[in-house]
Image (tube, one colour):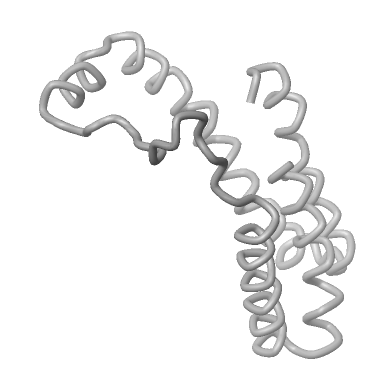
Length: 130
């Protein structure tokens, strides 16, 4: 869901900045963010627990940190994903700027390229279970 919202925001950002300018667009974005925060508090309250206890998380102490940082599977997965995600992130950040500044592609097409790069992560999220 995050990717869909980000794609809508990214695609709509071009129209907003073209209409009102980037400074005012940032203020509009801040207003949308604040409204979203308020709606989240109203629509998604903390669920009541069945026994009346307050929801609590795990204590983060030396033993739990040792278990996490000592987990070799997490380290292997982290290093394996570092190259692939780093390449994807770099391309997603640099390609739109390159398309507009070097290839002289119009802003609307560059926005579409950005949205395509953003939503291309959706199939991978479903595949990975996220």
